[in-house]
Each structure stands twice: as structure tokens, then as C-alpha cells.
Amino acid sequence: MTPNTDRNDWLMERARRVIPGGVNSPVRAFRAVGGTPRFVQRAQGPYFWDANGTRYIDYIGSWGPMILGHGHPAVLEAVQKAATEGFSFGAPTEREIELAEAILALRPGTEMLRLVSSGTEAGMTAIRLARGATGRSRIIKFEGCYHGHADALLVKAGSGLATFGNPTSAGVPPEVVQHTLVLEYNNLAQLEQAFAEHGPHIAGLIMEPIAGNMNFVRASVDFTRRCRELCTQHGALLIYDEVMTGFRVALGGAQSVYARSIPGFEPDITVLGKVIGGGMPLAAFGGKRAVMEQLAPLGPVYQAGTLSGNPVATACGLATLREITKPGFFDALTAKTHRLVDGLKAAALKAGVPFAADSEGGMFGFFLLRELPRNYGEVMQSDGARFNTLFHGLLDRGVYIAPALYEAGFVSAAHGEADIAATIDAAAEVFRLL
Ligand SMILES: *Cc1c(COP(=O)(O)O)cnc(C)c1O
Image (cartoon, rainbow, N blue to C red; front, side, top):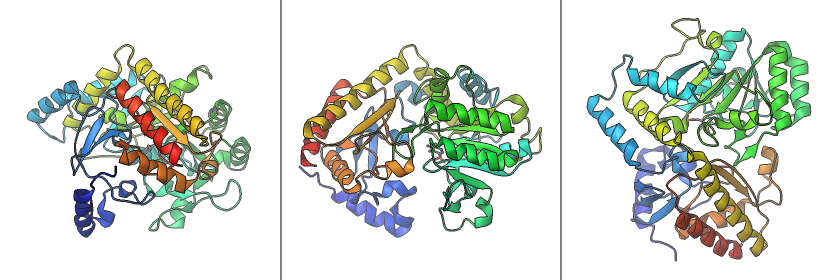
């Protein structure tokens, strides 16, 4: 049953000698679940093959970008053509305008966009822009939401309610996070208190509207509405970090999902990444013209990037957007993701395993809990040891989910009904062992 992981072991040993922890991004190291990471040799459609040639059904999809699956022919063709025309110029290209236009067409309220290379860069600059545009310093963020690894955002809640946070990483001086307030997600009372105490000093509130970095946790409609109202009332900017949810939960992102319940709902600044690059390093942030024109070269807020709007990355992003804007794309992806989640729920129920799951568009999350959690504290009540058994049970059966219980899952257009069925069958077997 257990596949031979020898070549993965050997690569990991080699990697550890030259790369800290053997990986270039921590969660890849399998530290949370134990065992040896699979080194990917190649991928096609919904599958990847590891260094031993073992095939896995991929539910990570590069943590979201691969919404079409791997190696989509139209995307491949666009990237190959762009590569022959040149890798990088350090001068503007028409494709940057095309991509900005394509993204803005789908995001009401966003009038201008700047392209950058990573979600971290976009989130960091969105904060700087909010501070520059308002002339204020304080930022609100929520525990369990991830906005990249910029210093000011690597913060966890301090002791007590609505206090300034503590750095979550060595190397971040306390002074750097002294303006960052960390609140509990979906906690209306803390939100009210924070604005009551700090309102005139708050530059912006940054949030994942559907949090994908504490597995999958929705902001409630009431909470979302109140975030919007309080920001407006106090002159703070509402920053939606849709790096994960943008073009993933719906064509218009999570913003459009909330606009169904809150008519006219819009954030002031949106941060995008992942899907808009289709697997290439590309991210963006955007907002109203008046805010965005605070950026250099027009305004006083500085931001720049050698590879920003890279011609190969924009070609990849544009080709990806072209596919996902085709009629019916999101309906089909949503239905397929529902089938997966419903099947997993039914299998867990049958095995008597506590299980709660949710999904929106092509993004899903599940918990070994009786009810869906509403915040980070509740997510962390999940049974870690049991999750690890589930993770390795699935991995042994050729199903690759995120190697940590606080990560979301992703279905692509390339996942077939047979893949979904095989995944549910594998999970049913593992649930019986839990
Ligand atoms: C992935 C992610 C980021 C960081 O993006 P990188 O491209 O990894 O720097 C920021 N915010 C959210 C919500 C993310 O999911």
C-alpha cells in the first residue's frame, strides 16, 4: 500500500544541505504532518507525479493558482509564445494594460490596478498605500488571516482584547508591529471596541473575506457589513486580501459573494495574486482612482519592481483569465467542488467521524470538528493527530491535500468525476481507520 518514497527521501536529504529545512516555503516541509515531502517531477491536468513516478490527485494546485489544472494547452501556448518574444524588459508592455483591463472589468469599484510579483508584495504595498492615503498609522488585522510575510503583518494577538499585537516571527522588532491591532475574526464586539478606541487613527482594516489560511472560514455577512460600515464611518480603508479567493471562489471574487447579501458592497483596496498569474509570479493591488493615484510616479507613496508586470507572467495570467471567464466555468467548478465536499461529508458520517466542511467556487475546507469554526481559536481545536492520520492515509492512496490542517483545498477544472469519486473512496477507507 505505502508507495516507495526512496527518491523523495534522498532529494530531501540533499535539499536540507543547501536549502534551510530543504524547502523554499515552510509548509512544503511536512513539519506539521511528519514524513517526507513529495518532490514534484511533473504535473498534468489534475495530477502530479513525484520523484518516484507515483501519481497524486492534486488538491493544492500551487495553493490556488492552478484553477485550470496543470498544463492547460491554451495557457501553455500563450506562455511559449510570450517567452519567444522576450522574458523581461524593464519597460511597459501592452499585455500589462490588457491584464489590468481584464481584471478591472470583473471587479466593480476597482478603477486602477498595479501589477507586482507576489501576494506578499501586494499586501505590503496595500498597507503602505492605506497609510499614505489616510495619513494614519494603525492597521487592523485578524488572527488566522495571512497577508504575506511583510513585517507589519506578521503579528498575533496580544494578551487581552483589541490590543496591539506581538510579532510572530523573530527579526520583526516590536516597534514595527506597534501600529497593528490584531482582533478575533468574526468577533463583532472586538471590532466595535477597536474602532471606538482607535477610530481616528486607523488607516485600514485588512482581511481575508473568506479566510483560506486557517483552512476555510467565512466572515459572516453581519461581520462583513460592519467592517464596511465602521471603515466608512471612521475614514479608514477596507482592504480585501483576495490573493486566494480572487477568481477562485467566483469570477468576481469573495467581494461578489458578499455583494449578493450586501447590495453595493465594495472594499476600498483589493489585493490579488495566485489565479491572476495562472502559476507564474504575478500579483496586484487595486482600488479607486483617487487612492491609487497616491502611488509613485503620480503620488508620494513609493513602490516599484524590476519584474512587475513581467511579460511571460502576464501572458500566463491573461490566458488563464480568458478560460475562466467562459460561460459556465464557475458553475461547473462550483458543482464539482460541492460533489467532492458532499461525498466527503457522507463518508465521514457513515464512519462516525466528526466532520464539517464548506466550499465556495473551487475552494473548499474541511475540519474534523462537529461544526464549522468561526475563528482561529476554533480551527485550532481540530484534532491534529487525527488530521495527520487522514493526511497520510490519503497520500498513501494517491490523494494530495494540504499538509497542515489550517490550509484550504482547491479543485481545478481539470479534475474529472472519476478523480472526485476516487478521492471520496480513498477518504471513506481512511475515515474507517480513524
Ligand atoms: C498566498 C497568500 C498571500 C501571499 O502571497 P505570496 O504570493 O505567497 O506572497 C497573501 N494573502 C493571502 C490571502 C494568501 O493566500
